[in-house]
Every structure is written in structure tokens, then in C-alpha cells.
Image (cartoon, rainbow, N blue to C red):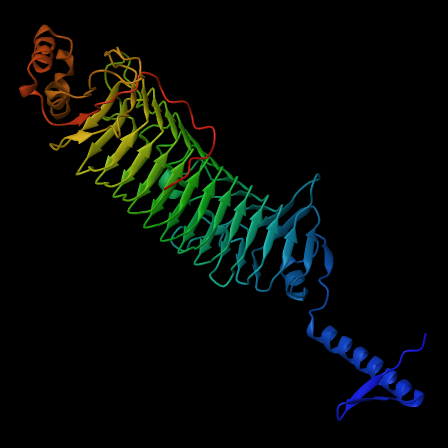
Length: 463
């Protein structure tokens, strides 16, 4: 089949001779090849995959690599700190002995100052212990947007992973261990975020550092499914707004989740198990949602008679200090010294649908303004509620009021606890129940639930 090439001239088609058609083909092919050459010159060269031997200086290999290269580190020990100033991928071996980056006991082991750097499967140890200079296992500086740190194993005295002013960083499935021989305050934090946007910290296992995850002046970040144990604070927020904390577990910390000076937090589906002082600490928190969390066994050590606490305080499942306009719903607070302790103007919070189970004291409310803890005919479950449900609608027929004047007296004078079961105290409690005029203002649940709400089967929608 003959292909006829034509051109328009003054409104009519002209058929080109065969010689012209041949010349036209030649020019088309030449132009196409030239275009391919231009595209090839404009596109970056293909990234190389390089095998690095532990006998080679790692910094020299990094300096010699081209942007985008993958450096596969062989098993062995790489001595000296490194600095990554171009987009690279550093990958450790799998299923064999590790690739260990040994910083020699001082300074920061890995410093990242370029975007799109990936650190995958590396072992990092023996960085410095100077918290003033912020020695860290991995330090990601503000130029290094889009950093990915995953499957790494870090053990050292200073900070583990420090994200400083970066955006879109991802820290996933890493294992971090501090130095347990140091005092807690002398250790660095496991993962430290400062002035960070849109970070994802997911699936990390952190122990024996100061705070597991510390997040300061950072926004729109997600902390999810991390395991945090033997720490001062499991998670510590400071001046961090509009962040999400979901599905994490703390155990044997002094405070599971310390939420401080922040607003717009979504704290959902987390667990605090056998923490000592607080499960969740809310200090100057506003417009936040505390949903579907489980806090169990927050208790201070008792003396040999089981009558006092060794450290002069009580373990609190939730402690709320100067926090207003928060939604506290669907949580299970169990087997703790105190279920919820509110003080310093912690009012106007929505507290509904929670289960208070077998706490030594369900509520400690230190204020004078009455607080209603039921909404639209639905309140909370109280394991020590002694009312009844004649209508069989699942709602108690009389209100639950957890505290009376004797409670307030005992808060002010703890030594008076020895009189708690005396005839005089029992008589005073009976008088308060019989004559409500003597009852002080406090928490009231007008619609207590007869059964504990079931744990949320799906992720609650934050509103």
C-alpha cells in the first residue's frame, strides 16, 4: 500500500513526488533521533546499585556515589560517623550478620542533609551521650525532606532518631534501645521530633530511653502502633497541634501519654498497661479527642500493709489539669488508684460512654463548679454503682455521684484515711445521702450505664 504525503496550499491538496516523500521520511527520522538524544540528556542517569564492603571507608563510598544510587552494605563494622548530602539509599543485609555503623562513642552517627534519603536495615551504635549538642544515632536536618528510616536497630546513650525541621519524614518499624545504666534524665529520647510537619512514626519498638517519642512544635503528624516500655514518658507532646496518636502501647512507664500545651489532638485506641503515675496526662489541652483508649493498672507501690503509697501519691488512669473543651469518650479506665483526677479549672469537657472499672477511687474532682457527665440520656459505666434499672433500658434510675464532702476532707488531710470506715464517717456519709443540701458541688452522672460499653470494633470517626 502506497502512502501519499500531502500538504495544503491555498485551500487545495498537492501530491508530493516520490523524491520529496523520501526526503520527508529522512528528516522525520533524523528529528525523532535528535529528540531521543535530547530526552536522554535531560533525564538523570540510571541509579546504580553498589555493593559496599566493610573494609572500605563508608564516607568515601558515599562521597563517590551519584545521586539516587543504592548502597548495599555488606555485613561488618563500619567505623566513624557519616554524613549524607545527596539523595541515596543505604541498605543493610537481611538474614545474615548486620552492617554496623559504629560512631566511636562521640558525636552523631549518621547526619542526613539531603532530601529523599532512605536508611533501611542498618545497625547503629556507640554514638555520643552529650544531650546539649544533641548527639544522636540518626539526625535528619531540615533540608532532608522525605527521609525514610525503616527496619533499623539503634542502641546508644544519646537521642535515637532526631528529626529537626523536616517535612514528610517516615520512621517505621525500627528498634531503639537506650542505656539503662544511666539515670532516666541523662538519656536521650528515642525518637525526637522538633518543628516537623506530616511525619509518620509507625511500628517502632522503644525501651530504656528518656521519653519514647517526644514531639515538640510539630503539626499534622501520625504516631501509630508503637510499643513503648520502661521510660519516663511513653509519648510526650509539647506545643504540638493537630496530631494523631493511634494504636500505641505503653508499659512500665512513669507516664504513658503526656499531652501538654497542645490543641486539636486525636488520641484514639491506645493502651497504657501497668504505668506508674499516669496513663494519660492532660496539661493545658483543649479541643482534643480522647477516644477508645484502655488504661489499666496505674498504681503507685504500696507499703507492706497495703495502706499507703511509697512515693506519696496515687496512680491516675487520666489526670486532667487546666484542660477544657475536650471529648473524653469510650475509654476503659481499670484497676488504678484513681480513674480520673480533674483539677485547676478542668471543666466543660464531654465525659461520656467511658467504663470506670474497679478503681480504688473512681473520680477525684477538685473544684467547686458542678459537672454533668451524661449527654442525651447516656452517661458512663461505674463498677461500684448501687442503683437499679426498673425500666430495663440499660440506664440507672438514679444518678451516680462519685464524691462527697468526706472525700474532699480526705484529699486535704490524707492522714485522716484511718477514719474512713469509722462509725462517725459512715454516719456523715449517710447524712449527705439523706439530706442533699449538705452535698458539695462536683461530678454527677445523671444517666449511668448498667453495663460497660463494648470496646470499639472499628476506628471511631473523630468529629
